[in-house]
Amino acid sequence: MDMRPHPFEPPAPLPRTVPPGRLEIIRTILRNPLELWGEPSYTLPWIHTRFFRERTLIVNDPGLIRHVLVDNAANYRMSDIRQLILRPILRDGLLTAEGEVWKRSRKAVAPVFTPRHANGFAGQMLRQSEDYARKYQAAGSEGKVFEIAADMTELTFAILADTLFSGEIVTSSDSFADDVNALLHRMGRVDPMDLLRAPSWVPRLTRLGGQKVLDKFRYIVRQTMDARLARMQANRAAAPDDFLTLLLDQAASGGLTNDEIEDNILTFIGAGHETTARALAWTLCCVANTQHIREAMEEEIDRVLAQDVEPVKWLDLMPYTRAAFEEALRLYPPAPSINRAAITADRWTDAKGETVEIEAGVTVLIMPWTLHRHELYWDKPRAYVPERFLPENRGKIGRFQFLPFGAGPRVCIGATFALQEAVIALAVLMHRFRFDLTDQTKPWPVQKLTTQPQNGLPMCVTPRSLPKSA
Ligand code: HEM
Figure 1 (cartoon, helix red, strand yellow):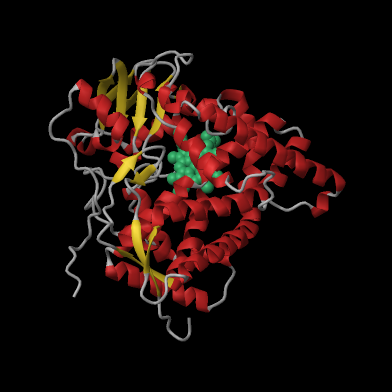
Figure 2: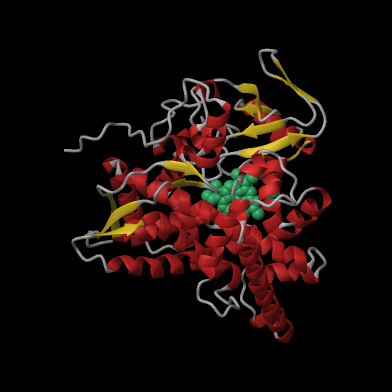
């Protein structure tokens, strides 16, 4: 008999009941910002506060979120701290570009993500997931423990490398994936100097060595672009139909410069695999704790796979699997905070006539982490209940209370790609294997570049004995 509590509340820091002192704030930001937030952040619609003298507005109210991200989006630029960390790596990639460069790039890149290309990408997602699943066959019928957080990062990287370059990366080393990890974790983190707002020429000790990895990385990307360009010039029709070819077509039509293509490839690598990997790992972890959810997913997956339909249709045909993934995105949003700064003074009034004054220069923190666990907007906010995301219940979730991919003009361009990838990967893996917790599994979310399990996620993988029809 399953004795686990229902509904299951996966582990996460509880709201602080006592505000932290200044030193504790610094320590917590460097160790795990998710542990910083107190009860008001999970119960109030907005809070005016200060971080290191910086005026900050924490926003949870969906109406105010809509105002900042959509209705008056032109008045809100990317916040300084986000740009300080990410711009040296991604330069004018979509995530960090602003103004006219961003506008032109978004227009040029958008066609790559349209449903027209989804079919081809779905095929690559399926192939890579099946290839990866072979690794678990070694588990044998008794099962074996694997590090699932690292595995999901490897799998989503393999999918991204296939959809980006069709595996044609020009590098002499076979450790491109390790270089990516080193780059993201050396460069993309908060340094105490960032918190103190030291000018950018002051060295960030935590990022030392990162520049060397970045230079090597950019060299590899440039070589890969040049090789593909040469191939396209020789015979355009023979070039693979992947992101790289599609982006280079944009260059040919004047939409992007070669430097901007390089920046965007780096951006897709940075924004497009670890995020999905984290949510996949959290989904497997939550599902392993909830027998009835696992069985509902297995039933759906086995049924759809038995019909032999193309993988591009799986997202629509597997609403429960999608819901289990979205519920993990709610509880463990891979991007736990969306930061902006007000350009000019602004104000917003709620339905009850209460007005929020937003001074020029104020940092606006919209945090999917607190928003998705907020007492005002969710029933049983800390419980893992995929049913809330089923099509018949979905209408009750407001557009601006669930923001794993952001909203407005800067909404994640890869959201549909990520959802499709996640459902295909979960279907392939859960059709063949069971993922169970072990005595060493001690999941605890920590905010680094993404919301990741501290100390990884060891899980026992066992082949399933499938029903004959599946
Ligand atoms: C579960 C997976 C993912 C999550 C949770 C996620 C989350 C986000 C969020 C929250 C933003 C908005 C940031 C802001 O407004 O400041 C964003 C933007 C972006 N994402 Fe994603 N993302 C995911 C997957 C992907 C994938 C697969 C790609 C590309 C292959 C991608 C590429 C981008 C880009 C280029 C932007 C910047 C868009 C712009 O500013 O115009 N993301 N993502």
